[in-house]
Image (tube, rainbow, N blue to C red):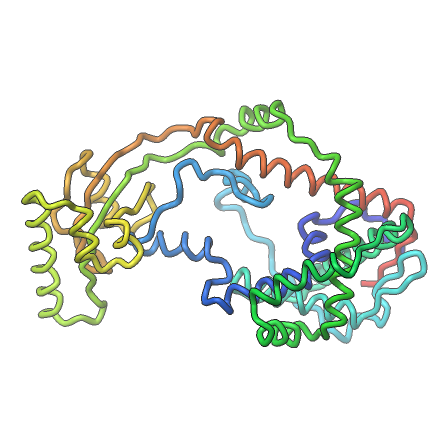
Length: 384
């Protein structure tokens, strides 16, 4: 059929343009012992365990073009029914033609597999290969081919040095052996990888000159968004906390639990007797996250810590120290350093992040519009 669609997910197109590079980058942190998504895991840990530093105050704008907090589905909205996976044998040998140039089934399947690997690494779950999934992948491949053809028509090239400048830092960071292992996982040779990096670099150079350079985020844009979306910058009541943890394993005996409580009571007596809370925390706390900072958890909002900890912490007054508090992690001694009422983050505090968000958003919209213009001039046939 003739493809007359005029839009597709800009985020997906961006992923399609950089699928090889981002695929290898997703392997890189794991090689250094870091989680693939440290920020997301850190936030989850903060919610599960009060010994993790809380997010910085006013961190209300999502980075890198992600939706702002208010831009989510309404509570209680029914999720869409899950579509069944599309069998590979139902996909035709040729999945698309762009001005007569074919995109073949094997290329689509390879791209889809790479994207699934990336989503699994970043999200921790498998993305089913539904017909809609294949169509979105194909949309990205069509967009890439249209942009590459435009770049070639305009004589845009990249040098060998420019290609190596993208590859070598990655190889150095990962190490040669793990770099080669990652290529094997991606089912790519080094030559094929270099070809893909070159194509992406050409497209990026085209977009930088024709699209990205035209994006201007003005102070008026920033002010207008802030004024029209005040709810997205609301901050809940927050407390700046320190704590000392005497950890108790979940399978601990009654005797071990009692010994831990006695230890916590002894530490409480020390800080109540005038010893510096931070020094006692550095010496005795069992929370590895906050211990080096003298037990400092930063700013904590309701819902970020377990209930017994939260209830005791928010009942304190500034500079007050709690009695021993029991949670599933053990026994805590909590000090409230400062408390702030719920408010709205001022523009001055969120302006930098908001500027980044708007620039990313406008760039995505501009790229989408540019590709849609290319689509309108091309003969595009898709067969799935």
